[in-house]
Structure formats: structure tokens, C-alpha cells
Length: 408
Ligand SMILES: NC(=O)c1ccc[n+]([C@@H]2O[C@H](COP(=O)([O-])OP(=O)(O)OC[C@H]3O[C@@H](n4cnc5c(N)ncnc54)[C@H](O)[C@@H]3O)[C@@H](O)[C@H]2O)c1
Image 1 (cartoon, rainbow, N blue to C red):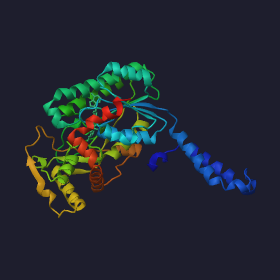
Image 2 (cartoon, rainbow, N blue to C red):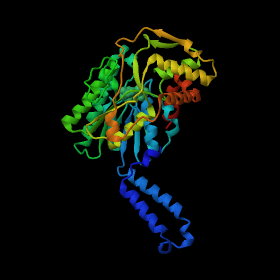
Image 3 (cartoon, helix red, strand yellow):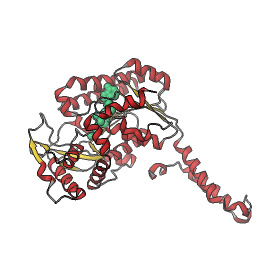
Image 4 (cartoon, helix red, strand yellow):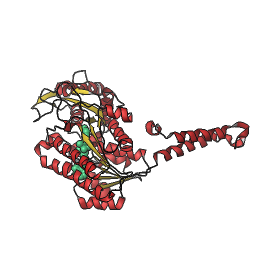
């Protein structure tokens, strides 16, 4: 994470340089020659101190909702490592999609706390605010799977719409108009924009046209967030991101499902003719963008996040097959024989593609990985974390909370 100190205020680097001049000024040095050998160490630790001070202006206490999910856990991991001086509280209901095994490596970090609970529970939220005095909210919690929204739309309305409204209301009550250094960051999806034809890109100005209960519930939550900004000046930020992939992705979604099925020689179901197009972004690039927007994005603004990386589903599945044949030592073409076409999803959007120019020009963000490399890393992660995958597919991950937290 070397980008962490790229953006230090100039006065700090000046101070570090001038301190090194004084230390280094030969005859006139403040320090006798015999201890001048300590200079590299002094410089190193002075640097660290200044760097720490520069990112430490604000001591945030942040509520991260849905931090046990796919994107949330990658976000929690980044913030825990990068901001040891923040207090990070992960509130997650632990639905089928919430998996505390995603956070095993950081669960005992001193700046991290887990609370099991529901964002629609106003009493719980009020108690948490009273206890922690949050200055920031990173709102990831959602029902997120389009297919599930088709079978159970009300669950999506409850969590995504009512849950977001409850969180907004409790933040407003607690911050009581004292909005300096407060941030309510809502994490959303490009699916709110509807479906593109063969050309064009979604910009922040594209009108909303959601087509599934999932995207409609996310669109409603985006509107509520903006309404709280315009009506009460609640300091909000939003981002709408394209499809993510990477470590800790629940294997009901296309990429981890295919990796799992290829490994076990099971069929690879592809909707329709596989011609739907998605713009894929590596999850660590997404959480890096969230970090940047949270700290440097403008209040009241929306930022689109995307990978400039469009693939038809069928081309993507074939690329996965190709890479896995290589990694598993199978003859080229073996895994592709597992592909089978299934009845298309109802109301399946044809194409999503993001224009992330605003994020690039305002905040300098760009995706860091080529897709083939990101896919390769993702496959390696799943092959190296077979136990994680086995627990998820068997349902054993749902015992983890009881084992780890219940006894505390
Ligand atoms: N996955 C993507 O490709 C993608 C792309 C763009 C935006 N998003 C958005 O990012 C956010 C996170 O997506 P994800 O893929 O990590 O989802 P996910 O389904 O993996 O995780 C959602 C998390 O929210 C928790 N949760 C669900 N209902 C809750 C409730 N009522 N109270 C508290 N916690 C609850 C779940 O237990 C889970 O840990 C969502 O808002 C989603 O709309 C996702």
C-alpha cells in the first residue's frame, strides 16, 4: 500500500527535508560526528511520525455496515490496516451472505469491533451511536443478489430501502446539524442506471432506470441519501460501481461459482446465449476508490467507479476455463466442455458500462489491474483457500459467529 503517503501535505515533506539538512550540515551539525551514524534511523522515524500525523488529522470513528460481506470485508481489511488510529465498528446481520471467516485475519485488531445486528433496528443504531459517537458511516449492508430479489423482493425493500432510511435518520438525529468532519458514505451500484444498448456509458448524470427489484431498491436508497442531503444538508457521498470480483466473493455469483464448478468438474450454467455484457472491477480497486472518495471526495457528490473492462458473460467464462485448465494442468479446452446454457434471467439487463472520468480527473483514481491478471489472482486465491470455499458451500461458515463471539 505505498500510495498511502503519496499525498502528504507539502509542509511535512519540507519539515522532514529541513530537519535532515540540520542533521547533515557537517561542521555545523547539531550532533557530534560520533552519533551522526544514527541519522538514517532518526530520519526514518521522523518520516514515519510526520506521515502518521498527516493522515491522522481526523480521528474517525466509523460505522461500517455489511462489513462481513464481499465488498464490506475487503473494505474493513483495508481500513483496519491503513488507519490504525481510527475506530472501526462493523455492524452486520450475518445473513447467508455475511461471513465472519472473511475477517479472520483482522478480527483481533485493536481498532476493529464487530456487532451482530440489523440496520433496520433503530434502537440498536441509537445505542451504537450513543456508545461510539460515530463521525463516519460506510454503508455497504444490502441484499445484493439479483436472482434472490426476483424471488423475494420485499426482503430487498426492507434492508435496502428501510434499512438505509433508518441509518440516515439516526445519523441525522445524532449529528444534530453539527456536520463538520462527518461523512455518510452510501455504496451503490451501476445497476440503478438500467440497461445500455451496444454503445454508450453510464455517467453520473445518466437518469435512473432500474429494472430488477434489486436495482430498484438500490435506486430508492440512493434517492433517500440525496434527499437527506438536500433537505437536511446531511453530509453524504455516494458511489455507483460496476460488477466486482476477487477474494471472499460468495459463490452464488458468476465468477466464484464458475471457479468452484470448474474445480469440481460440475456444469457451468450461463444465462441465455451468454451475450450480456458487464464491466468488471477487481474488488481491491473498488475499496481503494471508496477510501479515496471517503477522505477526499466532495460532499453531496456521486462518483461512478468502473473498470473500463467490458466482457460478455460467455467470453468471461471461457477465459476462466482457459486459465483454470492451465493452472490445474488440464488439456486446453477441457473445462469449456462444462459450459451449458440455461433459461435467461427475467428482465436480464443487456449491458452495463461505466464512465469513471470524474473520479479520475477529480481524485486521480484508476483501476490498477488488467482483467486477465485480476482473474488469475482471484483463481489463485480460491485455489489457495479451499477451506473457506468448502465452509461456504457446506454452510459451516454460519457457525463461526457462535464459535468466536458468542462465548465473549
Ligand atoms: N458485488 C458487486 O459487484 C457490487 C457492485 C456495486 C455495488 N455493490 C454494492 O456494494 C454493497 C456490498 O455488496 P456485496 O457484494 O459485498 O454484498 P454481499 O451480499 O456480499 O454482502 C452484504 C452484507 O450485508 C449484510 N446485511 C444484509 N442485510 C443486512 C441488514 N439488514 N443489516 C445489517 N447487515 C446486513 C450481509 O450479512 C452481508 O454481510 C451493496 O450495497 C451492493 O449493492 C456491489
